[in-house]
Amino acid sequence: MNTLNKSKKSPTINRSITKRVIELHNHGYVFDFQIADSREIICLQDNRYFLFENVLIKIVDQGYDLLSRSYKYIHTIETYCGDKGLLLNDAIYLDKR
Image (cartoon, rainbow, N blue to C red; front, top):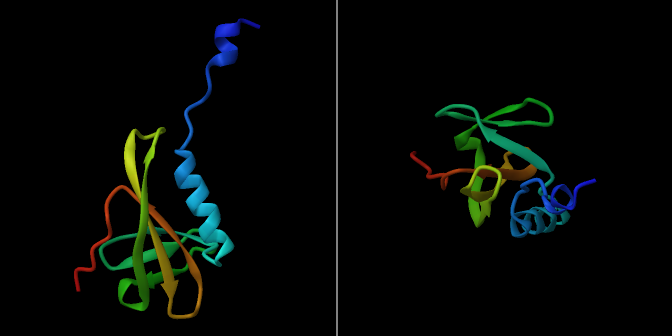
């Protein structure tokens, strides 16, 4: 195998983001969320939708993502039913209520 090919690594997400996500998982933030539309957020593990008014969203950190070459903002999500998870987003979520 060519040594040039050996030294090339696939781009990965920043280690600081990975470390922070693992830390938050250890604190119970185990679900992954994504913004569905202007009114709802979705839990990716079970496809449950939550209205923004029924979740608490806090920004906790940011890091540079080497894959997308952009900053990612880490938010914690707590739902009205007690589920806790994370939202990684290109922008800071702002409550527009």
